[in-house]
Structure formats: structure tokens, C-alpha cells
Image (cartoon, rainbow, N blue to C red; front, side):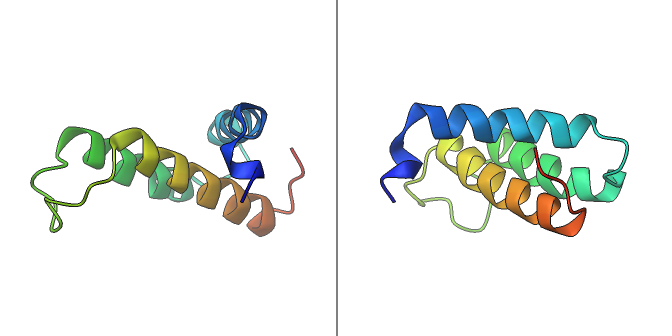
Length: 80
């Protein structure tokens, strides 16, 4: 838990995300699995089913980024 609060961890996570999104090995549908929910939450947070959810846009992005990076690295056996 303490690791999740460090800037170094998030810098590494978003670097991994950028590399995964640019990778030719990762299918486009897998890239969209990350990009579409994040973009929708940034654009339409009040329209989604939980309009009073007290989670900021950047927090949702960070949680999805961590999940996406782990899932894609496991699925494609990548070590970034």
C-alpha cells in the first residue's frame, strides 16, 4: 500500500502504460479496454450509473492504469 502512494511508482506505471499503448504486440481491442472507460469517465462522470461516487477523474485513471499494466504484461508476457 505504501508503494502506491509514491510518485516513483506512478511515474513507472504511466511509463509502462505508454509503452503498452504504443506496442504492436498488444491488440487494439485490449488498448481500447483501457482507453474507452478512462475517456468516458473523464468526459461523462455525472452521466455514469454512480453519479455521486466521490472519486476524482485522476484517481479512476490511476486505478485503471495499474490494473491495465499488470493485466497486459501478464497476458503478453512482457516485462517493461
